[in-house]
Length: 506
Image 1: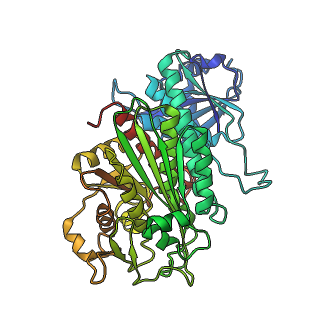
Image 2 (image 1 turned 180 degrees about the horizontal axis):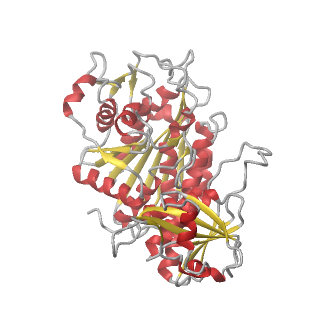
Image 3 (image 1 turned 30 degrees about the horizontal axis):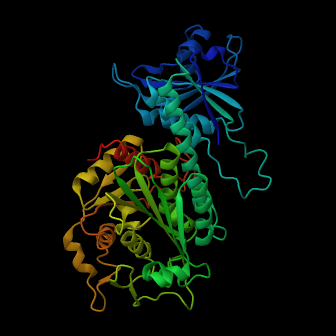
């Protein structure tokens, strides 16, 4: 990952390949953002005018490179990155605006060894946002490119040095260290999502989690197909029945001796989803390696909590299976007996995520955590409702749902609270089993949430994040979001754990 450091704010005195400055969109043209004063001075106070001449407007993500020439700067190139609209008077730039700008700059600087980021820093939160953005924006996935394309494939930015007034300030250093830990785990999450399904089987995913857990002092337990059969995990086994790669249920337990609260995170980990016997139509299979994004996010969040030493107990449950059609696969019309004892009539084998989550939710409920949050690329219906960049939040407690929504917005992960209308439960009634895995087509994302709610232990606060839209980005990169796996929901889960540790969630 790109090295992140803190350097004195006098950017002109820093030897680097590039100096990055911020430019905002003002009413009368581009306006230099705080942090660019030394660079502007080197340009005789005319940097904004030069940028405008070059066509810069300050629009979000806009990049403009210009040579430093004989300005006296020790870096030969200046990169101006657009921050978007200029804030109101006396207001600071939004943290996610800084995160997005740093991400766009880092991506534009691929192939560069060192860049000084002279962006607006008015406190440790801004330091963390810039560092996070730079590390996430510089991300690339090249594990399967032996030689690459010399013209188009460049190595990520080597070092991002963030210019601050006091590089030795404890709060600034702590913010940087937090950003490094979280960004590294998000990028590992992205690597898992981007790994081809022939290499990332449930067993392989469990092995990766086991190695990381041991490295960071996290207790790990892996239930293989024999243990799952003995334990009666009919949902996970039913989904994985058609694959030659058997399923796994992985438990990751981070504990802190001073913890007063406990959280359980549950992740959908379908390492490849063909739809099973209810085969997906042509054109819908190519990206289904990403159907384990929820489990990858949970894994990253638990490891992040351990690396940050948060005073909260966090348990992660990774429900891992491959959904394939074969002679042994679960059929539409089959009835599965779940870990909870309830029976489920499978009307559609492509509604498999809720089946593995149901078993994991009930298992997670046994330890009576203060709250459970599940994360899943669960329904296309949620994408139809909220688009490709926003995840939906459902919960059995309105206040908890609101808190998670606020946390997600705070860390820059777009989300929206969704209801759980009780009238939709009737559509899941089955003449054969306790419940069916499908209901009304309209409101399908909400139906899935109602199904999951049936497998949450009584009295336990629970929320469901449907990340089907933002988990995998198929378009051109933007901000700190790459093409492919995004690592969405990791920052929300980590901030939830931080707030819980601090006692801010009651």
